[in-house]
Length: 188
Image (cartoon, rainbow, N blue to C red):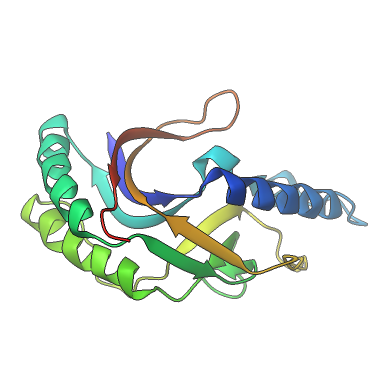
């Protein structure tokens, strides 16, 4: 199974962002020329919104069990995270196809990633050596040249748990991620 560790977007913030996405989607649906199907925005299902802490790739059940044991200890010692996220922007570059909320990693998030890295490496899981850019993906294939509407207010992602997600093909509602395990973050 293909897995990753992430911080879920809590319900109150999901509601706020879902309203913004609905308004942005309505604005996006009224272009003078309709975009080609491959350029049409694919909005992520709001229940799938998360901030990825680490991609784990294809992971077998035994590795997941060993990872779960280590994550329980790491999360018990980790601080609750309050991650600010900036206004919606394109990702990974200014002309990229993703529409995300991105922010500069706070120290609690950096500490969590730092603690997770050696566990992943010890278990033979992939670890991305490039710079970490925390973000929440709202949409894919956001059309190039289309303006990105601003959010009405700044966004703060409060995270009091780390989640192990499994990726699957989208279901009838568009959801792609299933929760495999949850660990509360122990220090506030």
